[in-house]
Amino acid sequence: MKKKNLKKVATQKVTENERFHIMAIWKYLFSVIVIIFAAIMFFGGSHLPEKKATASDWSENRLTIKENQAFQAFIESFETEFGQFRELALSKLAKLPDDEMRANLVMPFDLFETNRLNNPNRNIYSWIKKLQAENTAGRAEISDRRFFNYGVQGVDAWGQKMEQDFLASFTQATRTIYLKVGLKKSDLFGMLVFYHEMVHCLQDTSLRFSIDSDEKEKTYQEIIIGDKPTIIIDFELEAYFYELMLLDQLLDGQFSQGYKQSKPMSRTELGQKLNVLPTEQEFLRMLIKFGEYVFCDKQNIFYGELIDFYRQKDYRILTIENLEKFKFRQI
Ligand SMILES: [Zn+2]
Image (tube, rainbow, N blue to C red; front, top):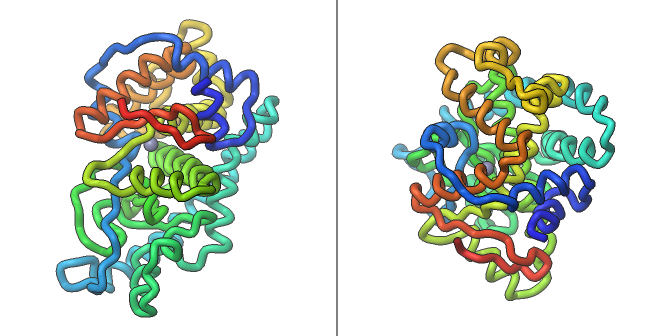
């Protein structure tokens, strides 16, 4: 039941195969593996609440104009890099026999391209500055639900520096994906994390499109704004699911096959295939662990670990009870 809701959120369509994966998430109970905690910090991104816009412009204490110009240049180079990664991924995904799964996995890439071609204000800092100059920094303008914006990891939408140690993250309030400046397509992990964050964008789009009453609007605002960062655990699991499915396709299905044949890829083998740097061994360990959860039907364990992880970081954790009715339950 929950799995069905979950699927609907990001994709609208559900295949038997996907449903199988999704249902499996709920089949078992929890166990904890400590390594995942540190690993998720880099792999999965965060969900930070955003402060409301204030009248103040950015100052010397904030992102400088020069830094923002450098960031603008980065956005352009990053889009070129990710565009090339996208071409590669789409050619791999074209071989997927499952139409529904393929369509679902392509959706974030379509979002990327739509945003690149149609969103001239995707630098969140320039966009907010422009809105502030026009005195129109309202939430609706900032967070056009068709698009997303780019920000720098560690600098919030209003240019203020903040603590952030995730490789990438998505903030619903302004629909901003924060990236590590310098990210290139050779950093496959970075590409996958960015893809993961775009899945969150699509989930947010679905939520926003389904708001058809004041009550739902209130619930939505409670989710995106608050003292504590809030995470919808079902969305998180779904984003990882797609991220790992994409990785598997990039490796021509060899990643999942290894698990199915009880011979999972070793760290060395996976590292070679992905051109992983020696400093990223921890990511590899995590990928192999996550792969086991997803491809060996241990999503229940994954679910439990994610909950523990976010609980330790003092997040408010919600699970979906009924998406149509916008019913969430805190866990
Ligand atoms: Zn996530």
